[in-house]
Length: 429
Image 1 (tube, rainbow, N blue to C red):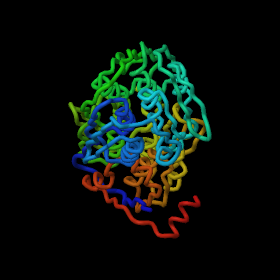
Image 2: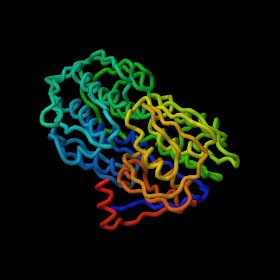
Image 3: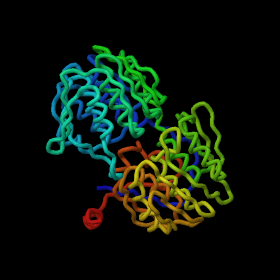
Image 4: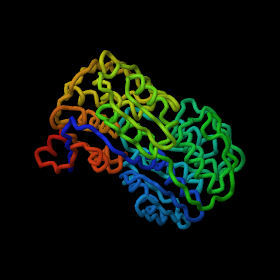
């Protein structure tokens, strides 16, 4: 087991390349199940979630060859193999296998998903959609069983705007009979990315990126080539790092329109941000940052996935800032760790109140989930002394080559093996 070590206080400068979008990748790979011939997905991030999904495609009889950032999927011999346990439990996005396998085979058995523990993230809207299309859904011994004689298009209104449910219903509906209309659909760029892949495979989808998506089912989908969009959350994390300790930092391979809410807040704090076609320039100001309030909202609002890294940045702002997360109730597990580093933060309900500016101090901290890990990296880059972060398997789920990328920008960051006593301490905490 490894830990991440950061000696803080080093300015970041240079250019960092953003990888393909993690939140797209975990949906695009299951979508390949729906095709009857070879699907090639390019610019995938080299992260553990991608490797797990590749293994799952092979578990159900497919052939999936990963060469650098390119995954070539041969889905011809896939079967509706039950996946109640094992790797499927390791990531939240395994639920996309439900929609994809239901769409192609009209049945699926998928273990209840794992991934980051962010409090209740029910899949009731997914199930509502599958049932509207004609599937029978049951929960048996911790696995979801889906069965349908055939899938028939339907009008589905999502009670809660959900990226996962929107994509999952799209996956099931593209090979259903007739028209499916998803109302109150999520609008995230990743949904457009998935719709683009499916359309290239022969699906008929209109309205992706709006709150009403119309899908006319087709009998068969074919293979295609697809290049994934840049990861807006990774890009946003590096922008936050640049706001904290940046000196002439350039973030390359960015669609800046995907990050307008973050850019607006960083500028409000006094950070220098310049954007062009596919790059963002970030420079931390010489004077103290200004405090701001943020509230996470569905896209195009402020992303919940950037709330935790942004909270670390706010410890450097003069005055009191309030961060409210309307998406996930349990997304403040990083706060106790920031307090270990000297932060003045308190949580009240769904809000965190941050008082600054404070100089953080290096400490031993633990990442409880992916974005909490990112927040601790931001904190470690700002802190005096050395920060030791355990639980870095969470960080590896979403940030490709983090140590290499930050080292190339001037950060003093490295990995170390944990000794037996440290491993016991982490496991007991």
